[in-house]
Amino acid sequence: AAHVATVVVAAACLSISQRTPERTPTAGPSLVVGVSRFMLAVVLVAGIGGAVVWWLGPLVAGEPIDAGVLASVTTVVLAASAVAVAAMSRLLRYVEFRWLVYAVLVAGALKLVVDDFRRSSPATLFAALAVYGVALILAPRILRRAVVPDQPT
Image (spheres, rainbow, N blue to C red):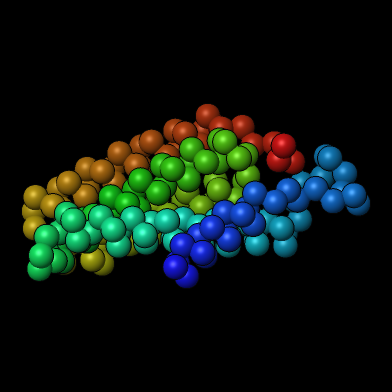
């Protein structure tokens, strides 16, 4: 319940507009607003990703849980998260989501090197690398098409 509440609160906080009376429409977001929105986006993406791995992991990895399959499921969720965050950057037009795309891609690469190469079988490693490769292609393409204005609407 606490995990779900954290995700809901982070989503609610991200939906709050940053417009205040003293800010002009042409001014960009302040550093404090940008960092706090980035941190909320990290909590939101990590919370949703963690819930998906918690729910999907045992279904796919079987009983007892195969560590290699679970590592590949986590990599697939990270890759899907990067593409989803890139798509969200187009919808919400917050620059912080653009920053988060690259952070999630780097986290996925580190996870591949540290966890997947050590635990996964060749078949699950191939699937994880294929899905991660697709995310490496799609996420920057989605970001390239996004136009981010100075002020969210």
